[in-house]
Amino acid sequence: MNQKPTTTLIILDGWVSIPIRGETQSLRLIPRPGTICSTVIPIAASPTRECCITFSAEALFDVQVKRIHEYKRQLLNLLHVVHLYDRIKRGDTEDLIPRCVLISGKAAPGYHAAKQIVALINHVAHVVNNDPDVGGLLGLAFIPNYNISVMELICPAADLSAQISTAGKEASGTGNMKFMMNGAITIGTLGGANIEILEEVGEDNFFLFGMTAEQVEGARTNYDPDALIDADPDLQSVMERLESGSLLGSSVQVFHSVFQSIRNPADPWLTAADFRSFVDAQNAVSLAYMDSQRWTKMSIANTVAAGKFSSDRTIREYNTEIWQLTQPTRGVNSSPLQSEVTLEYSGVPS
Image (cartoon, rainbow, N blue to C red):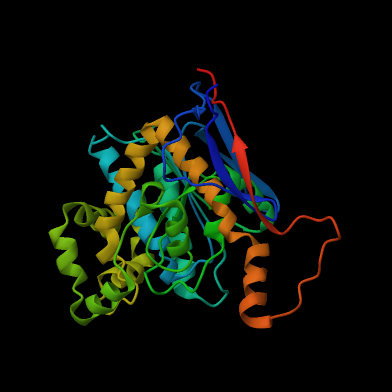
């Protein structure tokens, strides 16, 4: 009699973690739906009116939801959107996938630069979403009045989680964990909780880009963003579209300080320095998304690996390392909080 294959599951207070770096030949992945349909995202523009932007459900939902701040680099995300728009306008669409870029979050009331970035996102979105040349290849939306109810809609729908803060500036981050748990794949820098997520899922299930914290510190000594822009035809085209007024029209002067911040040698967020690496990583995202089997496997791996970020595990570590309180028992016949279970499976028939 042939012995059934087994694998070990680690149970952490109801969370299940399994080894994800090996091949699981018996797992038959379910691809994304092959039929064309539409997902309508309601965007509450004000208490008195509502607008709707319609995207194909087959589009990649590329999401950045967090506090609006220069170090979180919503501006870098927008530069990539303008890059995609520029490619579409030039007819360079061979390897583009339909992409819906969703940005949301709140800026501090007196944070002028953050407010300008939000306004710029909305201006670019108006142009992109109303250009017939774009077709269904690209959409951009800034969802206002961000709150938990909005996150409840966005988080399960996200395919790609943008965690693109300048390396060394993100203290921790928990939104990336929520997206990971819901199956979104992270594109991010090596900072904050991204480091732990990368450790859990492995490089094959994470799109890493950008400088490390050490490289960021080193780059500041002789940072020359104008030279970087001149040396990169894609970034040069993006800045030309933004600064010339061809994209923004008469509103271009309103955002002069935003564009100058990108060109500023003292820019602490080094936006121009990470542009090329970010675009290259996004190209890798597009290639992966074209392979439905691969993307689905990466998504499953992210959900499976999310057990590390259980709040129960976190509190237990705090107690072990800091508080050192006596842990109450669950009852005479209760099972331990952590246990190992051997799962037998016979595979999924083809």
